[in-house]
Image (cartoon, rainbow, N blue to C red; front, top):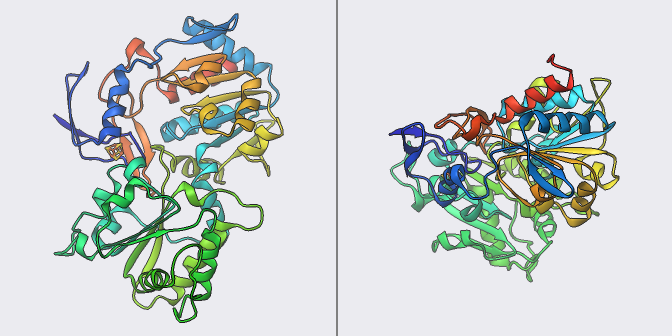
Length: 434
Ligand code: SF4
């Protein structure tokens, strides 16, 4: 039995015990249901283990030779390829994806750009206070879930950060206050105790709460008597006291807060509020933890920054990086692409129909290891090994800490890792030379 990190979500729990003979996994100890599902993907019914091409509107099993030749043909016929996904692959595969985008003069972006990457981009100009899981475990006394439901998306996060004692304290859960701000009572509310604070906010009123907190940051006296955004005055007072009195507070920010708004920039307002609180905090500070779900959502920005000096999306022309105001959403919306290479994600399910239908209209190459709504409309499917079980590599945890995923088993049919496959594509595209 050996310890392995789990690639079931971005928490990358490093305490999973796996018993394996190198051919099969016999036992998994310590993983949550989601983690167990990840290990079960090895033999799941929807696993794809050989390449497929669409012929006469049907996906047909073909040889690797034929699938790679078809992929290169699609890419060579394209003048504006789009590469998207890359949050469920290693940093090495992300780097190979960027190299491929450069070789084929494409636009590459990750799932992070419509999720936590938005905040990191804003933070470039405004600054940001981040924290680590270890710091929250050891020193945290206030945990705010804002539009975040980790009980379902990152199942062991609350176990680790809320119910833990930490290295420097005799006390644990009893000194950690949990505040949840959400328009719906999610599964995470179930762990709340009597000292905690449940704030059901009216939908789309987060901006009113943030603006009130900014105005009243130093005094709770002038909070409107009728409350704000559906939250009553006494609860708002308690929230202010927690925010300004915590020694080590963290706001765990979820997707719910990241939706774009036409009239204001919620992320900018939130970062402003944090700065204001931290400027005026007497004894402590409030940090952010960005709740990205995919196991290497944080990696893409690190790789883009270290490889090309910019974070987020990259546009290449004449094999050189050029400036672009486009985002993955604007590219698809304006139909400013003529084929797509989707890696380890399912945009046909995740993107709004207005975008996914445009994506589906152009040739689509899917690199993934299981069937999905995207695989159903793909023109070519190139299967890869399951990262963290059948192949290894570097990934970044939810709190930006690097973690090395390990290989436990050989993949079926010797299918390549994402990194190997992307490098093979570069080679094929260049007629054999990388
Ligand atoms: S919380 Fe995430 S990383 Fe941890 S065991 Fe569950 S799925 Fe795996």
